[in-house]
Structures are given as structure tokens and as C-alpha cells.
Amino acid sequence: MISESMFNLRELAESVIKKPGVFLDETKLYPEYVPEVLPHREEQFKQLAKMFKHVVVSPGTSSARVVLYGSLGTGKTATAISFGKVISKLASERGIKLKYVHVNCASAKSALSVLREIKNQLGLKVPDRGLGFSEFAQALLKEMDMENLYAIVTLDEFDSVLHSFESEDKYSLVRFYDVFHAEVMRLNFIYVSRMRLYDIVKALDEISGSYMMRNTIVFNPYKSRELYDILRYRAEEVFYPGVVDSDVFEYIANLVGYDTGGDGNARKALAILYSAGKLAEKEIEEGRASRVLVDHVRAVSAKEDLDLIHVLDSLNYLNLHQLLLLKSIAIGLKEAGGNYVSIGLVEEVYRRLCQDLGLEPRKHTQIYYYVSELVSRGIVMTRKTLKGRRGRSSYVSFGAAPLDSLLKALDRAIAMRREIGE
Image (cartoon, rainbow, N blue to C red; front, side, top):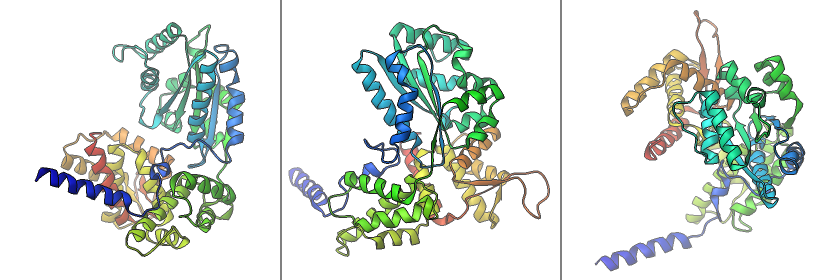
């Protein structure tokens, strides 16, 4: 009986594997995937190579500090990660121990927590407890000296540092070697921001700001022809040959391209392609389609508008409490029945959700920090005042995203985070 059951399970697995489909490897359309080739970011990559040339040619003689700035989905993070992989390999071939470190500052609370993450990724033995920022930094540098190790550190979502860190912490992360003097400068920094350069400088003091302006690389929104190339290249990795019409790439590129009325967000374009592929796959299984067509893109756009597709893509980057806060905003908007809801009501709903799940809610200041993060990601919008409302309060909204569809997606994302124990 058991062997027969095992045979049936094997047959079941084989039947699924042999079913016609469109995806060769759909994970390569996931937001966290970084491809080997980055179309239309060769110039930015070349600029990075120039600015970090000394790390390979004369390591330790100086510390590079470079700002990558541009709107959401313009390839900043992917370019930084790709560059880190390439230059680390080049350094290794020359006998230089160089590691690439990528820190998401959205989940960091202070400069010390940033240094701890750097230490963890470098695999260094520095105690996490009992040391203040200065002591920890000195211990980190001492360990790097002992290991003869160099690092390029990308501080992604650097806007979080500028918005919420203490001035001293900002200064330390921007002008590290002005605070901690060393004969051999082993740490180099890339700061990734979605703010305009003017706003970055404004967020810092004049001296630090001038340092930020020296080495900057701009990432402009993608034009439709650039998105077409990105979609076509990625499709070669993701789909079986011949299952996607070339018209699909052109249609999505025109929807999202900056020069054709879109926001130039490549992540949004890829998310639309993924959703269209999933719809086509379902129809192929039902015998109603044979490949991915423009009609599938139209259907996806009609069912889940482009703003929602962008929000759904962003859910992958949020922690459990950020997701709960988003759900609280959606519920608050439904309860209030308006376009905006007060942060006060959102906090009430958030505490209620935490209580239902047996979680300790974050404090008021952390809630405001999360809201600023969601604003910087382009997920929510805020206002300080509303017409007809008195008193001092802040208000938040999702914009055009349909709330019922969003709530379903949030419930799925929250369930997944709880399942993995986040």
C-alpha cells in the first residue's frame, strides 16, 4: 500500500513537471534577482570602476565615497551589487582580500547597527554587546587590519539614515575616516538614495554635503526603448524560447517608459511581465492560450492597475511590522471612507492587529519612521493638513491602489512572514 502511494505521488509530481508552461525560471523575475547583464547601465558601471580603481591598484591609500541617486526602479541597487561582485573578483585575482557588503539601512536604527551588519557580513569577531559606536568602529578596523581585509560597503536606502539618524551618526557614516583616523583605509562606501541630490545635501550639514557632491552618479528613469531591451533580455532567462510575443515587450515598455508617460520604473515593467506570464500559464493549462500575448498584459493592467503592481512588488522588501502598518492604513481608509486617514487612527488599528496576533506593537516614534520609509519607497503619500480638518495631525493614503486587492495581498505577505518566523 505504501509503495503504491509513493508511486502515485511520483506520478503526480511528473504530471506537474511535464505540464506545458511558459516559465523556464520564474525566479529571475523576482525583485531581488540581479542579472549578469544590466542593459543601459554600462555608463554608471564604468563610472563606479573609475571611482574605485584605487581599491585594486593601490588599496588602502584612500577611501572612496560615492552617491548613486535616482528614482525607484532605475537600477541603482542592481548596479552596486553587480559592481561589488566584479571588483571583488578582480581584486582576488591580484591577491587582494576585498569583500563586498550590502546593508539595507531601512532596517537599521543607528550607525552602530550599520557597523554591526558590516561586521556580520565580513565575518569578523567583534563582540555585539558592551561596545559603543566609537569602540565598535575601532575594534572593527583592528580586525580588518589583522585580516588584511578591504571592503566596499553599499548603504542602500540611505534616505533612512538622512531622515531618522542622529546628526552625529550621519556625520560618522559620511565622513568615516575623518572621525576614525587610520594609516590604511580599508572601508569604502556607496550611498544609494532616491532623493534628489539637492535634498541629499540639504539633509546634511554643509561640510558633509560638499563631500557627498564630489562623487555622484545619476540614474535617470528608463525610456521605453531601454525598457524594451531590459524586458527582452530578461525574458531570455525566464521564459521558454518563443513563448512571449515581442509585441509584449513593446507594449509594457510604452506603458512604463518615462518618455511615453510612465515613471520609467524597470521593476514595475518586470512585475507586469511576470503577472502577464502567470496569467498566460494558467490559460495554457486550461487550453485557452499557447503563449504570452499583449492581451494578457491588458488583462493584468485592467484587473490590477499599475500602481497596485508596483506596491505588490515592494511588499517583498518590507518586514512584518511594516506590512501590518500598511494593512492598518488600508483598513483605516476603508473605515474613514476618505482619501486620507490620520496617523492616529492608523496607530489604533495597528495596535489592534498586533494584539490579535500576539505581537508587541512598535512605539509611536517607530511608526513615524516606518511611514517615512513607506513614503520614500513610493508606496504611500502623506499630508500635514486636510481641508476642513482642524488641529495638528498627519494624514496618509495609498493613492490609486484598490484597497480590497491590496488587503488580500497584504494578508498573504503577512502570513508568509509569520510562517518563516520573522
